[in-house]
Image (cartoon, rainbow, N blue to C red):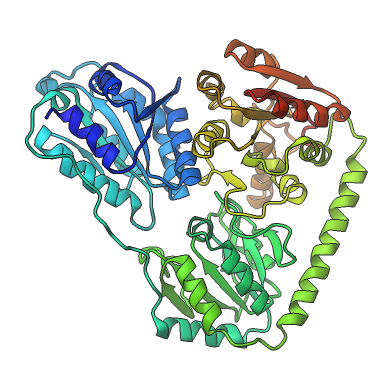
Length: 548
């Protein structure tokens, strides 16, 4: 059996039926062999970063290990930012790249470099296969490491001559492993004691809750405790219903801001996440003085990594939450706290309604009005792929996300994940309506994704919110000036996307996708509804207001 056959047989054994890639010369053995493996579909991308970005979201949406094939040193370099995003998202992924013939190693061939060294900083494991006899065992190990908590990408370099070598070592097969860790009863007992004594508990819901299918279990726990529930500022999944009275929104991006969010709490339980991804340094802890800190985490490396804990439990998120629910007695005061949370929720809803009404007639369209109109034109069962950044607040106050698979986004802060991610979610959730929301600046990092949607007939509705600026950078330079006491009335340099203005409808047309330009708020709902009704990929460019 040749190395290329070992590769493809290993993929089938591990349940891989999609390859996300951008073809190149050193990938010829794989590409030429795909004719013999019709069970595996190759999703074609025009840029390596888009391929990895799509695979990242596919892994989240499908629950499978994503598989990517890239091209030598420049191709891998193009993809590094998106591999970083997959690492932050905790996506199980095997990234491969064709490598030049090992017999040319000392000749410094064109496109050649140490691929394993390039990928190492943003992967869990990075290796080059040196002979065909290693291919099966290395790939088997790659799939294992990619799926160990916390899950993430691994990298394997595949030299072209190794792919053509003969080997008697069989393809790698997955082991039958039951790896969901159960919580230590003593740890659960200690945690229950602290939870039962808390007067105002809060929960931070990490992405692992959604991955574990434990959203309903968390709802039960929050109601039993009368606890408020928060998301991190950056999150990839929806781990708690956003229309539930206990949902309080997203945490700030610096320690004092997070502490302010928790100012009324005497206990914080963090479940299934890295906690916390900050943007700005500020001294102090993210918890108010005297606050008890608890954590549930499936990875021993992340448990108590950043904070001293009053109780920490190593376990899969769903199993630990179930154990807490089973052990927790009736909590005195929980019902009263739940009523107070509902009142807060009603107050928030009234404030958002007033905010939308105040901004309703503004021109260009306000973000609040744009989200309201987009929601009105979107099917209720649509999945939202989000890279709105500065419009995210209005998105979460307008749309309702009830389940784990209603919402997908990128972690790590690198922009350009949204459009690529829309491809991955559409492939991972076939038959579901997909709304992919992106700012204009972010979209240009992966605009080639639109061609892939057309090529594979993926009925995604791409909505580009065009404010003709990097709005988030303008907010951040305001924050920089304030934090570092920089006295300035200077303009925002190099943050406007004008001169020329980008035409997204024209770009979409050039890649085979119909588009609609919307300048008036009154036309948004109809445009969105028509795009979904078409059953084809469609791009809508909506002109919205810039920073006021």
